[in-house]
Length: 331
Image (cartoon, rainbow, N blue to C red):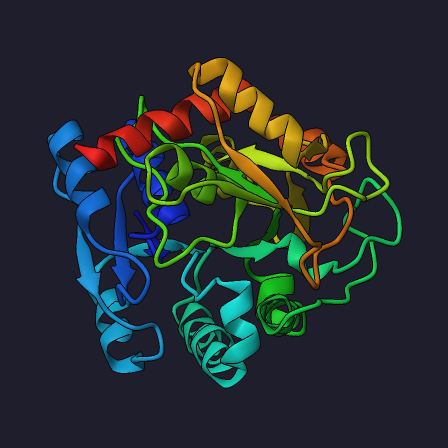
């Protein structure tokens, strides 16, 4: 049987492809390539010496998607597809709703029609908004601060309110914190489109000479060094959580945080990067950025207890692997 990866050519989707190739698990990728390209999959094909079934399809195209379900014996779906830039979503809320929410509605219709056994949705910690308490567990109130975060809440609701996912499908909603890092000594990694909003891609742009310095937005927060705190998870730990979720066939819906469970400040990340890669990162302190929360990190106890998952990579691993990939991009 075959797993369908929507958005499987993107950052997380391509790393999921790598893990499934390692385990010799059959899968097919669909992606409209709006914010990705096939270069990552091509690298994997060369490395593993195996062809990856790929189809350039928008999940809103029901007719084309139906041909995929008809052609392959799909028994599970991992839904990564979606636009993901928080700032862009603020400027283009209708675009984000149509692509992310309407697209998911179309996919969900087919998942139900074809009686898919396992369904995993790629959600986000952005559904929580400003933390009411820390660490954030799965029962934390949902209050998104952007259209992107609201998209994730809306899609979760589509799933939760659908009887199929509650009674006939092993359904997992995984709320990611901050995925970073890269696969296998830099073979594949994150390729940002435009100017990155996230810390690690921008930091890599600085050390590779694309930007003159790293902008650190605020050093007056009530944290150990004044800079914001986030939960960074290695992308391979993240996709490992998907594999474990895929192997759990219990019917019904489970929601899991997927994060390291530890907060790391911006300055701690800079220092860790400098130490492990033996390179200086120039930076400047800037005013706080509107909409940024002070601290955000996960309580990951639930996924550890139920799926026996844990994060195996630390911040040094993340910094080393991300830098190895960025050096490949320069070649």
